[in-house]
Every structure is written in C-alpha cells, then in structure tokens.
Length: 401
Image (cartoon, rainbow, N blue to C red):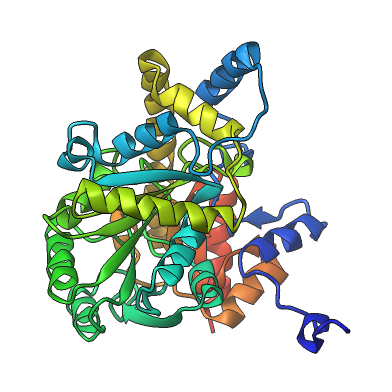
C-alpha cells in the first residue's frame, strides 16, 4: 500500500511559521522579522524573564523525579491558571464549577477543546472572526468542524463592527460553537469594550451558543485583570464556555509549550463530569502534558515575591509595546503613506493590521527584507529603533502606486 497521492504533492507552508523559515534563510543582514508573534527587546533579541530563570534555578535544585504527570496535569498548576484567569475570589472559583487541564501551549488547548466537543456530540459548526489567527480554520476543520465566519472589523479595518458581528452570531444555529478572542485580538489588536462583551454574551445566551475564548495574551493589553474583563460578560448563571490560555507570551516560555484549557460549567457536577471526557481527549492525543514550563509558571504564581517581580517584568513588556504603537502611529502620520492610522494607537497587544494586499506584502519582503503576514499584520513588539523608520519608508514605497 503506497502513501496517499495527496501526501506526496507539495504542501503549502504555514502562513506564519513558514515565514520564519524564510527569514532564517534570508542572507540580508538588515532583514526585519515582523511576522511571528514573539516579544523582542530593543536589540531585536527574544529575552527570557528574570523571574523565569530564577524559578528554573529553584526547580533544578529540588528536582528529584522526571515521572509522568497526570493526564490533566498538576492540580496546583490548574488552580494557579484558573485564579490568574478569573481571580481567586471570583464566583467561578468559589463555586467549583470550572475545571482546568494543563496542555502543551494554547494551540494544544484549542485542539483538546475541539476534540472534546466532537467526541461529546457538540454541533459541528464553528464560527470564527474574520479576520482571525490563520491556524484557527485549519485546526477546527481538521478536527471535523464546518468553519464559518462572522464579521469583526469595519470596512476600514481599524475598528470593531459590533452590529455586523452580532447580526452574524444571531444567524448561527442553536448550539453552534463560536471562537472569541479574549484580549489583544489576533491579527487586528481591536478588542470589544465591556459593553460590547455584554452584548456578545446576550446573543450567546439567546442563541445557546458555546463560546471558546482564545486567551493567548493576558497581560499584554491593559493589564492582567483588565485583559480579563470579558469574563464578566460571559460569567452568567447557566452560561457555559471554554477558555484556552497560553503562557508563551506573558512568561516568555515559547519553546516550553505551556498552556491550559479551562471549562466553565453551569455547576460543579457538570464540570466534574466534563473533566472525564477532557481526559479521554488528552489521552488519545498526547497522553499527558510536559512538566517543566508549567512547573515554572506554577512556581512564579504561587510565590508572592516572585509573582510581584513577574508582574513588573510583564508591565515593562506591555509598556514597550504600547510605546512602539505610539511611535509607529506618529511616524506614519508624519512620514508614512496617507491613511487613518490613529486607531492603531488605542489597539491592544502585539499585533497591528496595516491593510496591505498580497502584492504589497510581497514587495516588503522581496525589496525591503521586511516580513509581515498576509493583510499586513505586523508584530508591533518586533519594531526596533532602527527598524521603525525602515518600515515607514518601505510602506510609503509599496503603497505609492
């Protein structure tokens, strides 16, 4: 029996990680990588937090086993992530109507969520924002879902179009799955405010939709608690949802693959029952999660002095991204192509969507060694003092025609 013919034809490169491979093979020393979502410092390096290094030092001193973790990970890690998500005093935490399982990154959490819903008999239609993270459609379609989209941005691509978003969700079938971005929307940086979240939750409740909240950037927008304001919109009696968390960005643990899936049920009994099915989905996939990165996160979150230092480091990263946004808007306004750039200033998180077409993105890459994702999504954190003026000059050139 030969391999399927489709397996032998060239596969398209990943729209984001494939660009990283192209960057690595580009010999031009002035190349500027604004594609992959990693935090870089002013020198262009991907740093490791000092608190992460300290936690690793402590873990190394007391490590006495490399045995398997439970299928759902360490309970203390799950509690720490849940409390980071909603706060230890929140009704969700006090009522025990949630369960949290440890996963290999936020992507692992999304796949576990998708597999869990398929095996549990959920509706096979999932609604994704347009635009969304390029891996969302691929991930859910391979898990067996029919992918549909709801409008997210206005015609200019700069602000939330809440009316069209709500209208699309009202057309969803009862019980359909909807993926929402908790904060720092990828790729646009445009987030709903508290009132918009309440309106979204109204439609979710009205149509009996099942939300999956992709929450990969907690702390990178306005603050740890502020970025979780969407919880107050969804945390209603009887409303159930799933949250996919990532510690890649806010703990600089990209290659450790640290994440979590939190399921919030109507009551504790329903949460406990669902946990058993989550474990089946995990066991059939990767069996049990990796330990090291999660141990680092747990060590930081459960040690008050270390957590305080981590929050300070995270605030500094958030501040640099905010300053980069402001510098980008100022530079575009004074020397860049004409356009309404001001909304970028108030957007949140690592990404900005410049609204470029495919040819313009290709010219940035080929002529100027500047790498961006389709649509002109750039990683604002990747901008450096030397890279910013080059980007503005290149944008002026590729949009001149």
